[in-house]
Length: 77
Image 1 (cartoon, rainbow, N blue to C red):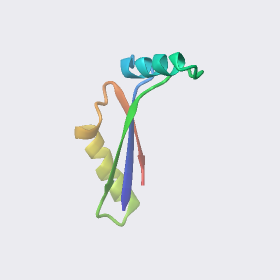
Image 2: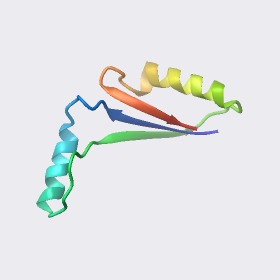
Image 3: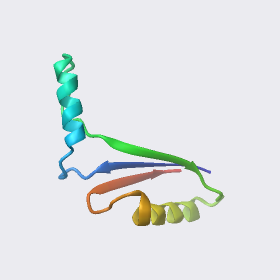
């Protein structure tokens, strides 16, 4: 089963990389606002049951993949 985990900073957390990217795009005359930088992790999981897979991936995110103090994550199976 293919799994995609999207991780982004929580809305109240400053994103210096996003701000730098926004400034660079604006300097190139692109009109963009509120740029946020995140990460995406894609992997295969040897599970057939979606509920079991979601539980296992949630545990992965909580223990390793995401810093849940400052980041939110989304799991796509």
